[in-house]
Image 1 (cartoon, rainbow, N blue to C red):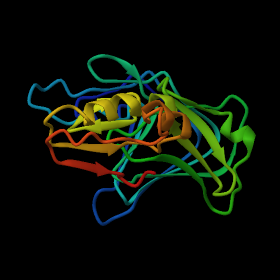
Image 2: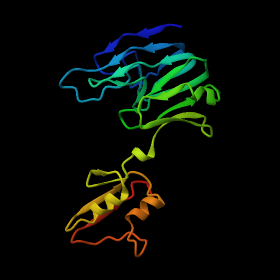
Image 3: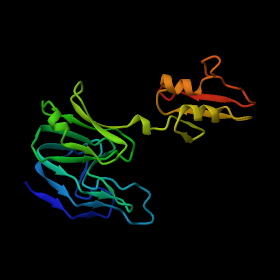
Image 4: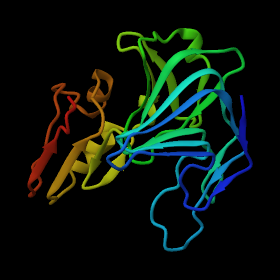
Length: 232
């Protein structure tokens, strides 16, 4: 197997490999072993407003597919002017499939997509992902972890719930629901509270009126909007 190393993408996309599937034609990259290390993605142009992505490999677009198998190493790559680890990344619905077992020595760093979409590696071509396969992946971001979803035969990069803000009030993020609810109740306010994650029993109790056990809105001269945003 070969090695792709010491390259830099001045477009900020895919320092080692850029699988571009934004058009009508499919773009499929089969990586049957090999290494992608020591690469960097960074667009230094002052006019660039797009985030850099995919220091090692970027799978970009709904028709972009990366197939993995064998001994695969995608690590030690970086992205951005403020250098951060960035191995394997997706944008705009790029697809990653594990089509065979990963061999001993495989090490693949996963980075949360800059567009906020989910990063998942799906079992492809009838292959069932194992725990040994999942152990070959690691998160490039300290607030995310790699988990094996056996029910859906996939590996998923998920954010630690404790690092997700609880809610926003008029666009301002609050770490706890209690702090958000207090801001929501400020005097003479026309405010919108938007949930960013489910409110658990503990979080609810922290914001509730201790005398009633219920959330109390003071109605301080404003119009209040509570946006559940798909949460509960």
